[in-house]
Length: 367
Ligand SMILES: Nc1ncnc2c1ncn2[C@@H]1O[C@H](COP(=O)(O)OP(=O)(O)O)[C@@H](O)[C@H]1O
Ligand SMILES: [Mg+2]
Image 1 (tube, rainbow, N blue to C red):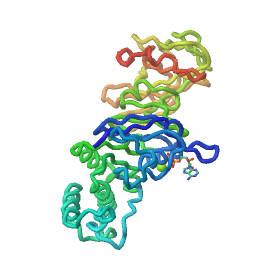
Image 2 (image 1 turned 180 degrees about the vertical axis):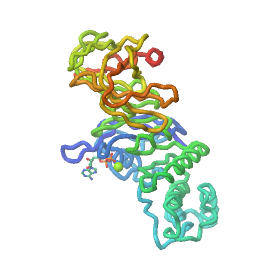
Image 3 (image 1 turned 90 degrees about the vertical axis):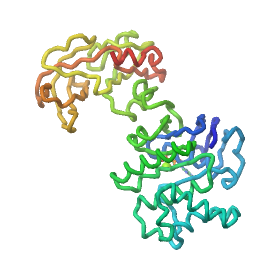
Image 4 (image 1 turned 120 degrees about the vertical axis):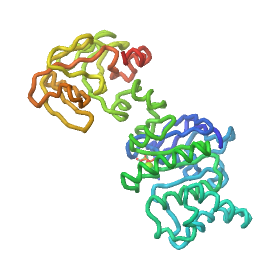
């Protein structure tokens, strides 16, 4: 168990940065998730932590010790891959014991540790089976046991659930999280799956094009996305493009003047969470923004309903409304009104500065 610190860690292949200036501080016992689209540098970052990819620049510290130049086997990290990479001709117990023999752990000690860790992942009764005699979820647990048997200072998981079907993935998610919490194991998991990231992490790191875009809790990322990319990648948003004319007024390309709470002026994008938008037959009261529009699309998601409302040829807003017995549910083609409070939108200046994320407090936005 240890604190993990990355300082300006970069990996360059020729002119191309697979990871660039990645700086992270993972607390002892924390579950950190690296989230981002395919190719954004998640695996590269994880493998630099494990010691399988040599950084071009920057440092990795584990428990305060600089391990950047240490080979993988001297680092005491446990790495679990997406494809479990079990030895097909070895039993479950032999698969788990394999690395211990390599590390010259005495046989009696190895046996005890294998039994202990197989119990931990609830495979104590299946030690004699071969991998092909196990389900996908069980195989993944063997891979996990194989990483845990070293009592790693940090557990590294690279898309560990992506080979499992949807239902099993949810179960294993909970299992891994519980195990991590009971062992208080510093863990870094990589995924491109937003829901997986949100349900498992203590904190998340959103990456894009090799760089960290934002680090924070689920709430930080959702309520105060640092930029347009994060707003679009974590949760859903409607985006209106236009100009921030004053810090309090955004003018959309379609000509709509939106009251907001931002900072600065210039070309900008306004981002709006669907559940912050109300839809009603008459202009909504009590919100700074109210606009007429026409329903373009309605999608039933069970308890929730998505309503796409066109405010102008250039401006479309998605509202997510609760499916209540007495609630108003518009149909396609209906003339409706939408509304939202000034504090509930985020505005991102095109110049790259976040337009006032620091001024807009989540409490204000919530009203
Ligand atoms: N050995 C390599 N040589 C050249 N490019 C690589 C190598 N490994 C990874 N890359 C590139 O670096 C980028 C990041 O890769 P990776 O870290 O695997 O992304 P992720 O895990 O987020 O999908 C990708 O564009 C990938 O093609
Ligand atoms: Mg990857």
